[in-house]
Amino acid sequence: MAQVLPQRPVLYPNQYVWYVFASSLDIIVTVFVLSHLGMREANTFAQWSIAQFGTWGLIGLKFITVVLVVAICEFVGRRNHVAGRRLACWSILASLLPVIAALVQVGYLLTLGDLEWTALPATEAAIEQLGP
Image 1: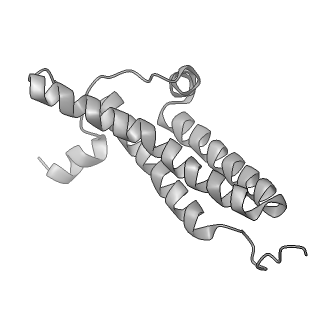
Image 2 (image 1 turned 135 degrees about the horizontal axis):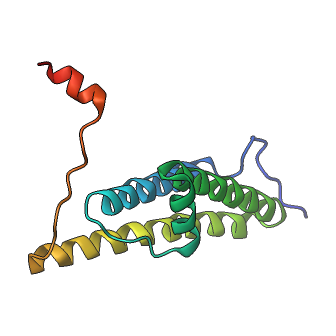
């Protein structure tokens, strides 16, 4: 007997929300450690995207990977619902790994007292708000 799948636009909306959240955290933490702590991006392709297009390159790369992962989960899930759900869950965990690694690295540097904070220069809009 064939498995009846629910009729909805996507198969795993809850997992996709968590995946987008984890991917957003990845962007936030990456930008923070690169711009404020002077660390280097370990992913060569992501580093190239940042070098070419700045933060927007990183955001664009992450957006493309999110769309690709959701499409793959949908493709797999329409053939094997359990495997698609499992893949969606593993994708969440895979997106959290760099976030956890960066936070552990920051925590380690904090315990050593070897963490240097770099303040970003103020934008013209911020300077104008401060007034004369």
